[in-house]
Each structure stands twice: as structure tokens, then as C-alpha cells.
Length: 408
Image 1 (cartoon, rainbow, N blue to C red):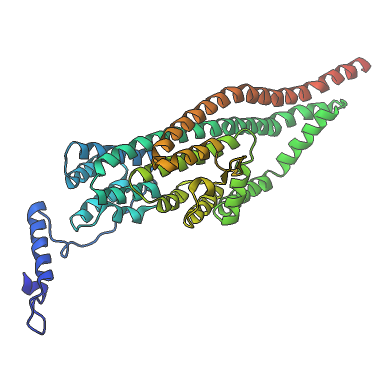
Image 2 (tube, one colour):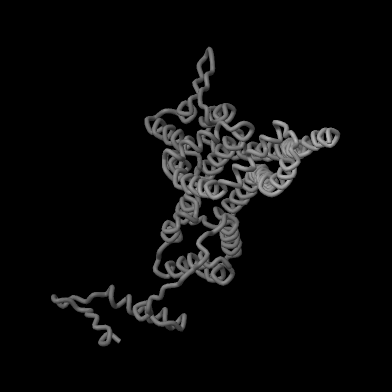
């Protein structure tokens, strides 16, 4: 075999090169064990995968199954082989297979996952890296799987609270556009032919209807152009600043945005500290987990101040004196920072933070449930008022039609 490969195991100084010989033996063992050709014979092929996205639920299922396998005392290579057979998403299946093959070459799981950071959260990669080094991977995966499930459920509730009004508003716009373009022109034509005096409200709707029917191509082009511009703009730094600034000041919904970022910070921070990650490194990783750019900047500021030997609670702008207590941080709740100030002296801050995370999650779920209950009647009244305004505008000329009939 060595003659065909033209591999020289002895250098010019007649020293034996053991690395190449050991690689040859590893290839032979791999071929005998898997009934496959060694890696240097296999031809690389390009695989086209149409599905390009991995949902958070599929990531959670991946962590959940891996945790169950490892807690059942299945070795890690066998666990990834079973996962490769069970995963349905082609993109995730490819990643699992790559992890399985890289483990044969003594590459860790995080070495592979770092190449797919757009699918796997920074927190997941950091925790797997830490726990791989501490040889407590099964325990960590169980805790990570629990926190991921809570985050998925919370995100689903937040999306439901935001999507529900958007869907009803879209239905209303579609319905009004249909009435303006198809119903009102036909009704108003009969009024114009009969020389009926048209009221101001009806004339206003007629003008809107004419504008839509005569300029619908320009309106469609402007909508498409605005959508493309918005998609490009929100990916820029200035766009993210504008969008997150507006989100933090939206009526009613600002609390959801703020509380969600605080919960993500607490969740990530407690997991990292509980796993043995240093405080500064935990703050840096957490800044990449929270989505709001203002929270990212504030967490980096806190990390820089803690690095100069300032206490964490003081870096979060809590000043406790003998005479008064001042707090000026607009992004974090005062009770949360007070709890950090009380418990950071005992070095059990992560245990307290975990309890706060549970309380905040329950509070946000109750707020979303109450918000959905309160928004529904307001939205129904809003849609009903628009529909009744159009109906009244259509019916008003009929009263003038009766006057025309009497004159005749």
C-alpha cells in the first residue's frame, strides 16, 4: 500500500517518520471497522441541500436527544450515530454527521459547531466548550435542554402576542382595499348617473378609491421598494439602532421587549456562572446572546467596568450609601440589581439569578396572556368601526336619492 501511495516513512537523515505510519494504520482500522475506504481514497462530492434553516425547536430536540443518550451511558460516538439516523432536517443531519466524523479525528463538538454559529446560539457553543473540558457534559446538556425549552415557549408566546394584531390588521387592509377597488366604484357610478348629491364622507372614499384604482401599479412598486429597503436597512448598524430604539418605546409592547432581553440575560448569565465560567467571560458571552443592541452595549460597558475591579451591582449603576440608595440603569430592573448587590458577597449569585429568572418568566407570561385578552375587543371595535364607516358612506347617498325621486 505504501508503494502505491508513494509515502516516504524515512527522511533524508534516515529517521523514521512515525506520524505518517500511524495515520496509515488509522485509515486501515477505519476501513475495516466501517467497511469503507480510507479518507485519502474517498472522493469528495458536493451535496445540494434545499433546506437552509434550522428552527430553535429542532435545536432543542437535538440537545434533548443527545442528553438522553449520554445520561443512558451511551458513548458519545454511538449517540451521534443514532442522532444521525433520527434527525429529519437535512441541514442538521449534515452537521451531526460532520460532528460524528470529526470525533474520529479527536476534534471536539464545539470545534465543529463554531462553523455553524448562525444555527447554534453562542451560549450553546460556550457551554458545550466548558462542559466538555470539565467532563460533565450529560449533566450540563440536561440543564441546557430545560432552559432552551423554556426560552422556546416564551418566544412562542411573544410572537403570538405580536403576530395576532398584525394578522388582524392585514385582514382589515385587504378587506378595505377590496371594497375600495371593486364595490365602491360600482355603487358610485349609479349615483353619478342619477345626478344625486354625494355627501362629503362618500366623496372622500370615492377619491381614495380612484387613487387606488388609477395608481395601483405605482403603489405595488412602492410597497416592494419599501420592503426591500427595510430589509437592507435593518441589517445595518444604524437600522438596528433605530428599530430597537422604537421597540423599547412602543406603547404596551415595550415591557415585552425589555423583559425578554432581561430574561435572556439572566438565563445565559446563570448558566455560565453555574458551569464555572469566569465573570468577565460570562458577561462577554451574554452580550452576544441578547438581541437588543442597546442591551449589548450596556452589558459590554458593565463588563469593562467590572474588569477595573468595580462591583457588578455598582457597574449596573446601583449606588448604596448609608444615607440613600440611587439607581439609574434604564435597561435592568432595580429589584434584580438589588438582589445581585445582596448576594454577590456570598458568591452564590447564580443561584439567586436562577430564581429571579423563573419569577420574571412567569410574570412575562401573565402579562402576555392579559395583553391578548385586552387587545382582542379593541381590535374588533377598530375593525368594526372601519367597516361601518364604509357602509355608512355608501348608504348616505340613498337618502339624497329619495329627494331626487320626489322632485321628479
